[in-house]
Amino acid sequence: MIKSPLDSFGEWTDMSVFLELKPRNDLASLFVDVPPGFREKAEVPEQQNPRKIKYSDINVVNVTDNFIRIGAPPTPETIQKRHKEAQNQQNQPKKQRERSQSTSSSAPSSPTKKMQKKSKKGEKSFDFKATRFGAAVRDVVIKPQTLCSPAFDDSTGRIFMAKVSVEPLSGPLVPKTAHRLAVDVNKLEKLEEFSAKAVPRVKCARCKLGILSEEYIMTVGCLPDDEFLATTQSADFYCRDSCGAGCDPDRHKHKKAEDLKANPKWLPTEKRAMISYANSILHKSSVLEENIVIDERKNIKCAGCKCQLGKVQKNHPDIYQFNQIATLMTGGPKKTPFVDKINPTQLSIYMAQLILNGCETQTSMKLVIRSLDKVPYMLVWLLDSYVVIANGILEGLRSEDDEGAILTPFPAIKLLYKVFNNQTAASDPRANGEDTSVGLIDLPLPCCEVLIELLLRSSLRSPPACRAVGQFFVGYLQIDERI
Image 1: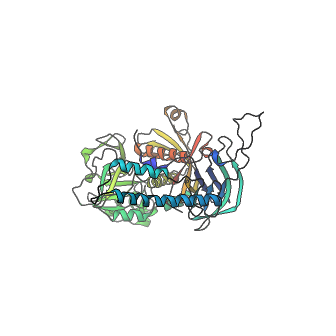
Image 2: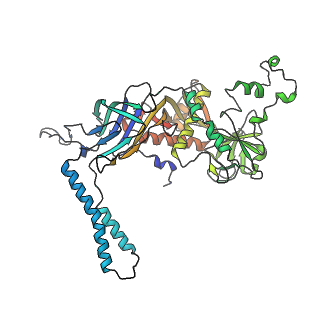
């Protein structure tokens, strides 16, 4: 089985916890997986089916200012018993050392593998068996007195659901538009930090075939927007570099032919590569032509593995645009990657930027994600432009002072999505272009695959009751490491 770097993303399992905050809602949603062993079973009458087990008490989840715990608190007798077991566990290695010193010779011998295995087995036999599990939530304060509507999921009978007031320490959550989030995610500081490393290298992410020529010691420049060279929100660039002052020639008063040409400040050269958050932009003369293939649609593919990498810029045919997921761009002598594809958080932030930028440029909350050869792969619908999520798995507590698992809330965008197959892509009006309210985004196939995998894994990490709405799945993409 092929392992994915997103395997560390996790999924909903025993003792999982999920906390979701929304700016417009006063109460947050709390979900905790409680195994049946933590709930008291009520006596089942003989007339009823014994398989239908009922529970007499749901007060098994304890919520405080910064902690979420399940299981009954330990009694004083249990605490004393654990304390004695811990002391015995500490004293046992000392006795073993004394025995080994008395029986060993003057020349000490290294322990064999069998002895090491026996010692490990002995350590496992004294492993701590927790009866209480919990987690500490960072950067927020939970108000336990506001907890309301506690209940267990009817279908499984083990997912605890409730509403509770949660306040971030940084202040109340403020709703944000897609444009505001796109600006926040596309941090210019990250681009400038990477461009300062210089010495860029671009390779195919799949077969590692070199794309950028290493003949020159190149520098890296920054573009303020992903679509800056095509269509941009910056009016001064459009009037100066694209329309040739045709919109108002009297006002621009261009006298020289050079004034009508594109400003070289924004264009790559054979000694300089340009970079935006989603793409790396290279000049034709700096690209190894024998390692790429350009088809009739002006799409760029790898000559080695035939993987889609990017496309030729429409209004600048000498400029090639390569996607950061389909290619691997590194900078500096240490070859630091711009997007770390092993880090799920960076991948999620990158994909969130693509979705937010697409919603802004297409002026639609619904987007069809297509490959560069116009094949639709999925439909995404921006449901909530800004939510805060904290999730993880509760860990065993040795004492009431233990924190257990550490949950760090992070901001995210919440999406409804639908993955197409050959049949649904042909019949769904949103996929075949009949629905004009849906925007279209064309991405290289590897980028489409990573986006689908990220959303599917985010759904698996959510509680089962929150994974689907009608014909859509529900997923989320992280937009920053913490609130």
